[in-house]
Image (tube, rainbow, N blue to C red; front, top):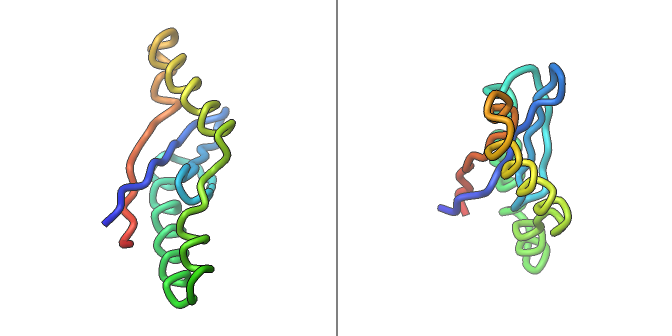
Length: 100
């Protein structure tokens, strides 16, 4: 089982979550909603991809977000933690399990 890096963040009243390792994003009304939706999207994606032949399977299981996106979220997490304690829950890092 592989652990995937995911980030959830709030902008006004909308929560968004992105899987940095598989380039998936979802949005919803709460942190719990986006976590569940993202895990469901990852599981559905993996199930579909496992039916494919190589090299398509490996390509689709190893597509991560661009480095600029990773850097943007790393900076957001760092700044939220360092400078704005009351807003730190607006950016959350969490793992998601991947059955592959």
